[in-house]
Length: 237
Image (cartoon, rainbow, N blue to C red; front, side, top):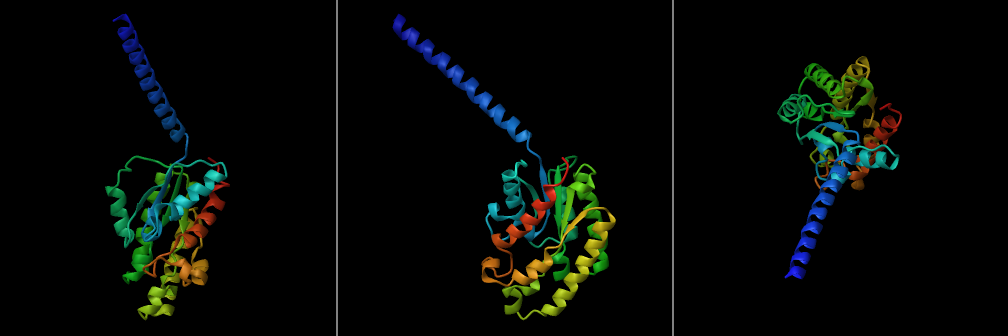
């Protein structure tokens, strides 16, 4: 009987030790994750990565590249949905669980659907400015930690060619939107990345699009991530 009680007591002690060890490991993991910086990516299909796996989205690729450079970020918080315009992104932000939260890095890429739906550039100017103000607020008011990406020219894609889109018209309007975006971004002291010209050269290639022949592949997002990483690597955190 004494032997049975001794074994039972041993199992009880081991069980308690295992529970404590598991709790400690869990706390250590939480602490390790809390030491990482945070990243909020705002946008539309180009940010959520329509047609690609999460790991191939440009925010995720950027975080992985930064990790290799010794700059640790937790998994990006993405507020983006395919088809969103500026006003819809604004509503999406309001609906998301980010009120009062701040982030170490914020990116903003929005506008292609405004152009696609034929909305006025002046309307875009107003709504984009509001979104950029929100982005700066999310970055703790630090403009140097906000990055804006230009709008890609979807007119070069196989999708646009196959449907007989007026590619010159699309390009002209995308330029107008990007000009407005760049002016506002620079006026507000935020970094602007031009990804449009690279996309115009590479966006029509078979390896550059997903199955819908419209949205970028992970290969294109890799270039965007590389451009973003170049900027983040020289930021002061």
